Amino acid sequence: MKKGIWLAVAAYVLWGIFPIYWKILHQVPAIQLISHRITWSFVFLTIIITITRQWKSLREAAGNRRIILIYLVSAILLSINWLTYVWAINAGFIVETSLGYFINPLLSVLLGVIFLHERLRPLQYVPIGLAGVGVVYVAYSYGQFPWIALTLAVSFGLYGLVKKMAPLGSLHGLTLETGLLFIPAGVFLVVMDRLGQGAFLHSGTRLDLLMAGAGVVTTVPLLLFASAAQRIPLSMMGVLQYINPTMAFLLGVFIYHEEFNQAHLIGFGIVWLALILFWGEGMWVRRKKVPEVAEAGEAA
Image (cartoon, rainbow, N blue to C red; front, side, top):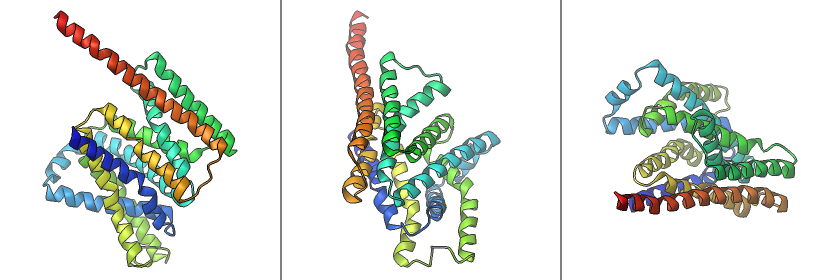
């Protein structure tokens, strides 16, 4: 389990410092960055598939229309999430992106109730309601709808929902997702280059390497995450996942000096309180079940 914890921490820390990576590439249009992210991720993943000799199993697993359709939907949701995230970071909204990923776990629970008919315990409705209040307060304090946070939360929440129903493993699934987007992303980059608006090979060696490196920085934490999920309980993954938005929040406030006033603190505070209550209720239920299981074992 110890190895699994370190793998999860590594994945979430890498995701947490993503804003620094994309900030360095701020002069490259977000849609070009996402196209490079898709293109180079697919290239990197095909190298892994080739080295591990998994092409045959991938073709067999992805060999029907239903699977292709599922992963086309997940690919579109993932591209929306990536585009919104990168644009928001380079537009100076790192703090709001962190809000989106603080909200996401609670939204995922709600989506499970709506679409998968999962049942919530009565006390679990309290943090979900509080999170809604926090979002409304943030919208009121901003004076505008927090569309960045909600787009990130909804797109990633729906992505998780689709992946819940998807049949492929993480490596094959991500390869298929990026493969479905590879051609349109590549065509877009070629067109931009022909129009004289392409950034790649026209922005200096350093930025070229960083654009190409987007494939590695995208896939490595995803593979670390998948490996960790096989080794440690989902509840522990749920606690550790807050490393990511916490680091992004701290970067936005203390490194990039984004605005965070008292009104924002109240709104975020309500969301944080909702997360604490949700986590605390889950811990209380699990600890309550342990003595019950022990008593049942003794009775048997």
